[in-house]
Structures are given as structure tokens and as C-alpha cells.
Image (cartoon, rainbow, N blue to C red; front, side, top):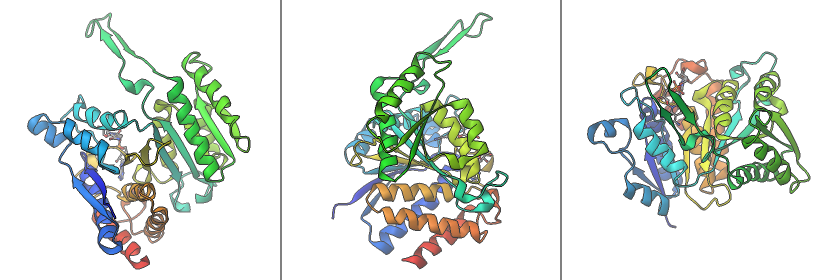
Length: 357
Ligand SMILES: NC(=O)c1ccc[n+]([C@@H]2O[C@H](COP(=O)([O-])OP(=O)(O)OC[C@H]3O[C@@H](n4cnc5c(N)ncnc54)[C@H](O)[C@@H]3O)[C@@H](O)[C@H]2O)c1
């Protein structure tokens, strides 16, 4: 069997701590289950950038594009690099360079006690957000004029293409159909963004016509934030643009117990054979870094998504069950009500997984 080449970039801040534990999980699967995983450790991130100016070398990008099946990425962001040069090159180099147009963010609570909403339990929190990942304001179009003067002007353009909007919306419907979901919500701001989001509105209902069994519901993103807090169980699949997806999924992560619990995949959804990139939703959390405090569960669930992508869907569920066991037994980090450190939490989950083989 040919090996799956997995590129691993630990990232900055808490990144190396949680990705280090996620790597133990991949090693467990390789050693104990015989999964053909070829782990390729890359020394890229803020430390490397500060050492020799390297961000995302062309030969690495090319090998990832042509040979790798997946990338595991820790968060990027370091106070020593305020301009985030390395983070932009690496993160956008992958999302844009590999055309990973769908950022898939499951919002699922693993236990009642981590859900902070009054009267709500884990069964009320189970939906997936499809965030457009290659367009919007993140393309970096714009500029500053008369910078530093009283007359300065700053512009960021919001780029939306028919192709980009349509394929992301379709990815949401394809997912809904494959998973037996009944509704897809599309969140925009078409009442204010009359050009860009009128496109989203129009394309959404056009694509929806191809999926007659699925109810297509439009919601303004500001109202979505309200409805999510009032009743998250009303949502199954949400499709939205890059910026709104970024914001809404941090809000939604709170329903799961915080950012330490939120996983994500960046995929070229119409062709699962292409390389995909997997990362916990959270950032590098500089205040937690180096203290063994970061929750590794988001990274474990992220590996679960990666294993599904590689064709081992049952393993995603196994990992989720083991993470749930850690939460239930309070064998977890402080952010989700435990007393353990990053490593001890990971060890508990790894032992649970090993027991279940
Ligand atoms: N994809 C990415 O690489 C990515 C995503 C978001 C933020 N960032 C970067 O990360 C840096 C910090 O950003 P921020 O503070 O806004 O966001 P953050 O996600 O790092 O932290 C937000 C909050 O969540 C908590 N948190 C995050 N991950 C956690 C974990 N695993 N366990 C327990 N608690 C956790 C933090 O302590 C903090 O209170 C910035 O440089 C930012 O640009 C990177």
C-alpha cells in the first residue's frame, strides 16, 4: 500500500504543544493500527522566520501540492512578528495556493456540561459551518493612502466570484445531502452589501434548486448570531463567506466549550483526492504558550477529520468518543473543567483509543 504523506507544521505559541500531542495520535495509528502514515516534520513558523527569514519555501509548497495527502497545521501568530509575514505566507499559501476553498468547521458539543447556553444540552449543538476560504476580504486587495497623516485612507476590497461563491454553497448542499440533513442556511449581509452579497443570495437559491429535498434558508449574519445563541438546534449546515465564517465559528466554538474544542478542515471539496489541510480553529494563544495548559482536544478532533479524509471515517468517531470520555471523566484541561495539563489530557485520550482497538 502506498503511504500517505502527511506534512506537519507545529506553528507558534501553543501550536507545537497541541500538534505535538496530535502527532502522538498519528504515531499511535501508524504503530498500533498499521496505518501507512509517512510523517514529514517541517520546521516552519515564527522561530524559523526570525532565524533566517524563511516563511513557506517554494520546494516545500510544491512537494505538498504534488505528493502530500494532508497537512496538519498548528496556529500561526507570534507577538515577535507583529506583521504576521510568516503566517500570511504559510496559511494563505496553503488555503489559496492549494485552492482549499471550503473551510469545514463542525460545531458539536461533546457533553452537556460544556454547553454554556441556559437550558441547552449537547444534543442541541450539532451543526457544520462551511466558510468560503479563498476569497472575500482575505485576498489582501486594497491599500493605504496618506498613511500616518490626518487624511489617511485604508481600503480592503471584498472579492467574491461567481465560481467561488457557487462552489462553496454547493459544497454545503452536497454535505447536507450525504449526511441526511434537512436544511442549509446561508448567512450574508445582502441588505447592506448590495453588490457582493446579492451574488451570494442569488446563487444560493439557484444552487438550492438542484437539491429539492433540502430546505434552503436565508439569514442575515447579524440575525444568525442572535438565533444561534437562542437556539443552536435550529441549524444543521451553514454556508457563508470568509469573514463571517471566521467570526461565527468562534462564537459557535463557545457552545462546544471554547476554542480548545473546535476542529476544522480546509478542503477542495469537489475533489477529495486532492491534498487537504487540517488545523484546530484556535490561534496560538500566546499567554498559554509553554505552560502545558492548552487543550489538545481541538487538535485530536482535527486529526479525526484528517483520518476521515484519508478514508478511515470510523476512526474520526473513535477519536471523538475518546475525547468525550476525557470530558465526562474530567480528565481534561482547565478550560473545560479539568485539572490536567496538555500532555496528561492527551495521554488519557490516547489510552482510551488504544483500549478500544
Ligand atoms: N489559523 C490560525 O493560525 C490562527 C487563528 C486564530 C488566531 N491566530 C493568531 O493567534 C494569535 C492569538 O490570537 P487570539 O488570542 O485572538 O486567539 P486564540 O484562539 O489564540 O485565543 C482566544 C482565546 O481562546 C483560548 N484558547 C485558544 N486555544 C485554546 C486551547 N487549545 N486551549 C485552551 N484555551 C484556548 C485563549 O486562551 C484565548 O482566551 C494571534 O497572533 C492571531 O493572529 C491564528
